[in-house]
Length: 344
Image (cartoon, rainbow, N blue to C red; front, side):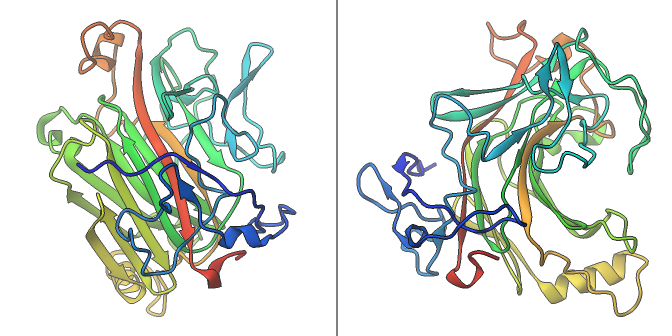
């Protein structure tokens, strides 16, 4: 696979894109961002920038610094006095999700290494897990135990654009996810399950699952549109580029620079009306509001859960099977927007 250009010098600029985050706008947003060999950074599917994309430097990240930019990302479950704390720095009164049980988010489960962000799933039975058993919206209520994962949440919001990530999923019974949240809105760019093992699950390590979800009372978090498609490769074997173009008219999904799937806003609504118990005039295309990005790992009990360190590490390379860690690797996250959508 062609290697996408990665390293570049970001122009200094602050853009007003948040929900009342108090950020000021500046003209540098429109300046071209250059790579080391003086080429502009563009979507992998539009290297000539025929669409006129402008890189949003406030939500994009190359992960090539020695420390994570915590003005850009909220690390869920950072430790204070020996315990993980779940308190959003911008919304201190908002309940923070601790992860999909039995896994729990830990603020210690990430690192920056060789120009990449690496999110870690750990076999960690001695972790100070939440003791209360919560009934999830979907699935059975199970305790937090044994497994810790990572979660980073973007602190700035944007509406519409081209969202791109270059990543390799963890090679285990773990979901490596890239998604987003808005007001009663969830867009799942992907939930890649690294190793499906049980019975009819062996295809999951090649599957792209993406969704638009409505969290209003009408649907209560179920997808108003979703797709599960064979990618033609194992998601944990190598890095791939996933691109998500999103605007008022619908969604186009690109994989390694090629159009993989597309759906119009009208087709989303048609799907929702056919697959959900909603009024006849229900508008299923709820993906019209500002979102912030999420990067995380989760256990999916309905697909299988690692039940030991050895089980978690089954596919790890020789020499790494006993450290109790499997990695979800991310080279970059980039967001481009059209001029009419900047500052929305």
